[in-house]
Every structure is written in C-alpha cells, then in structure tokens.
Length: 274
Ligand code: MLT
Image 1 (spheres, protein in one colour):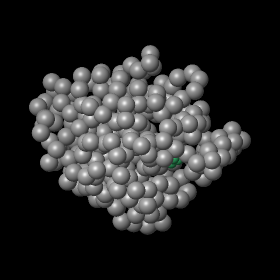
Image 2 (cartoon, protein in one colour):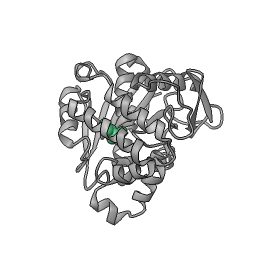
Image 3 (cartoon, rainbow, N blue to C red):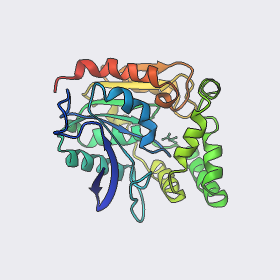
C-alpha cells in the first residue's frame, strides 16, 4: 500500500485496514520504524505474531526499500514528517511507536515534536545523544567505502559484527537475510541515511520530559548501541521499563523474535484501552 509524504510515494503495510475486520486497538496502531540500512522486512516476525493482538503497521523509510527518496539532503526530521503523514493517511490521532536504532532516533524526534500523538514509545537498540566527532568520522569513512567499493562490499562489511556469534550459529539464515535486506536499498539511500544520522539532533533534554509509557529493549551484546546507553535512557525516562534480551546483538527483534515479541506483548497488553 502507499501513502504520500512531501509529494513522495511511500510504501507501507497495515495488518488491519479500517473497516476490514474489527480489532482491539484498531484506532491506535502499533507502528514499527526500521533502522539503518534496513527495510520494513526487519519486522516480519513481529507482524506475524503481534498482529494477532494489535493493528500493526510497518513502512519503508523515505528512500529505502520501495519508498521514493527526495532530491537533496535527508534529515531525521524528514523521516519524522513521514511518520506523521502516515498517521494522517491512516486517519489515526495517536499510535504506539516502536523504533529500532535509527528508527529509535526517528521515534524519539517524533515524540519530542508532537508528544500527544503517541500512546506509548518503544525504543530498541538505540541511543539519544547526537553523534560524537568520532562517530561522524566513521560515517564519512563508510560513505567513502560505499563510493569506492559499492553497496555489496558495504553490506558485507557492515553486517559483520551486528549479529552475535550465537545468532550466526543458532539461526544461520539470519545473516544472508540481513544482507539481502540491505541490498534492497540503493547506495544513494544508504549514503543519505548516514548523513541524516550524523546530522541528527541530541535528545538528552527530552528524555526527562517524556510522559508516555516507555519500554526500552536492547540486545545483551549490542555493539552499536550498548546496554549502558539503554540503562541511561531508563534512568532518565520516568517510569520506563528496560528489557535486556540475552545472547543477541544490535538487532534484538530479528535475532530473538520470540523473546522480543513476548516483551512487547507484556508491555502493550495493559495499555490496550482504545
Ligand atoms: C542502525 O542500526 O540504525 C544504525 O546502526 C544506527 C547508527 O549507526 O547510529
């Protein structure tokens, strides 16, 4: 399915389009935001399981997967604009939002801008501070690598280390699936995503102002956004809950879907009043 944001056609999936069948919570869907450099397919196992209980929406971020990109610069704020455009298109006043990594940056920015449009916030394997100079330099090197070696080489080196050795042994299909997902994106989208992350705002001041139920999920061995960052967020966000998923790395939902889904259900079920 498609919605339009900033004149750009954007791809989304909706487990329960309004009018098709009655569903609890149909007015406040659970919207998943993928990270860098993924597509909506990151959430395949969540759609299968959680759509038994909730209206579940996934989408491809601007320029990624089947969604059109804009000319010129890309910012996390534009991704947040697209989330609001999606919610307007769905005709929903508010939503439960769940973002992983870059998707978490987008969710946090969206909650900062219009807190009343969210019933709850789920931050997975993500961070709240802006990039350090070292992180910006790393992104510049990744863009250099993309230009010099192309997307395939980038996908191979980027995916090394994102999943834990345990995942590689327990679920050997995950690495090729992850690489195939990266390759659904263009080199341009991947480079633009790196620039958008390097230019993102800092959300340190916002954490103390978040007033909606918040769940923080992190892989025990996340090498990109480690447990210590998740613990800082939990301390700063009033009443938030932290769930650490054992044995997994940066993609906790993808590496341990059953554990991840049960944490989300445990969090969301008491909130289902709409
Ligand atoms: C992601 O998974 O979205 C990115 O690795 C986040 C980042 O590089 O900051």
